[in-house]
Length: 512
Image 1 (cartoon, rainbow, N blue to C red):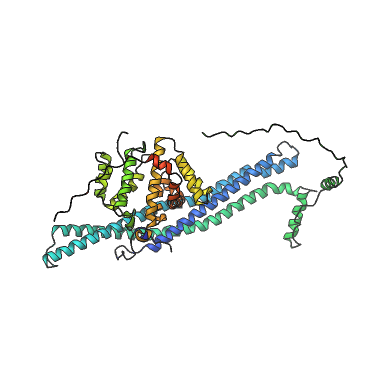
Image 2: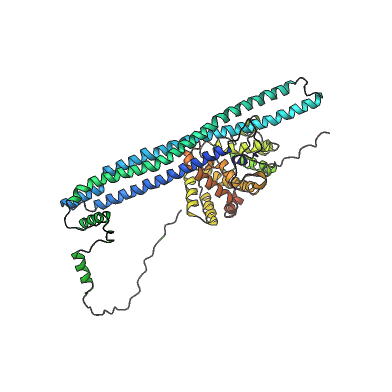
């Protein structure tokens, strides 16, 4: 059964009330509309590319006759080439069909941002509501009188809760009609695209007919005349046209000659002598510690890599595998900023900084590690190579081997560091996905969290939303095959493990 939006956020549907409302159905319809538009855009692009290939083929066909200057051939070749008509048709398809779809999809990215903002407000709202209820109950018990004067802490909690409630109400009232309007616009766009595409085809065929028709009316004895006569008769209801062209006299003479070859004496060749076999040769193919966030991946032993390894280890040790909605629930912003500064200062080992951190703070820091890289975590060439490997390797084992080969091919310090970090992340995410029954984070959910910052060149570009779903699918496949990927290259990991982290002494016993 498909997971709901709130399950992907690690929330139960019960965590809704009169303030948050329930927009699950509206969001589902919005996502369905976006998916339909993406499919439509892909199909129209395929039609356009196919027509472009046909155009090139016709032009190449006409070019075969460019040295023949009899009037009839020149007229026909020019009509088939019809560069001006074909260019106009391509412009009409792009301007009247594709531009409308692309513009609507670009706006979908803005709607997605609003959906995310509201989801964050919903999370904040329930968090503040729980804290307010807890403080209110504790104050009432302490004073023994629920109507007693509220202390400053309770008053402040109430003010924050009311502010959060007003914010989530306002965003919900804005988002509901926004989703409805997008679905309406997308529906109209889909309907118009089919009709306008048919209209552009009609314009093209009429223009081609106008170009060829004057010549066709002057044709006398030829297969073209026979063809036109046969089709005209069929349209008058006089029977279907003949399936093939009539054979010409020249063709009949050719067949007759082929059926009457001369008789030749049998030839007995001498024994074949051995000769050198032409050989073919195959051409062979031939730490200074600094900031963590935004810093370049200078080497496998660089601070950013050490910090990522420490983050994943701390997540494992602090219960991330069983945390519902891990990587979906935001951490405490103040604590996240504090931990981030300590990691960037590099005055303490990362393992010591992160030892007692909250699991949601650790998850937020991990996502920020990828999001705040100065350059792409994976170079665009490697991103494209991973997509190509996924497309050409339907078998998962072959895919894992291909991915391992691509990572092993890293030949600079930064690409080697990225090639080391990616399997570390995939291995951890695979363990999280294995516990999806308790943490509600499947491989797809995890891919949604990480794909934009790993497999998109510019996740902040609205145009990148068109490639988001393929990136999520690729990331999901990488997670599902993480064990196979690491199994294909054990020597690589044994040789390139970062230096061992210092052992942290056990915490002192709690005071009684």
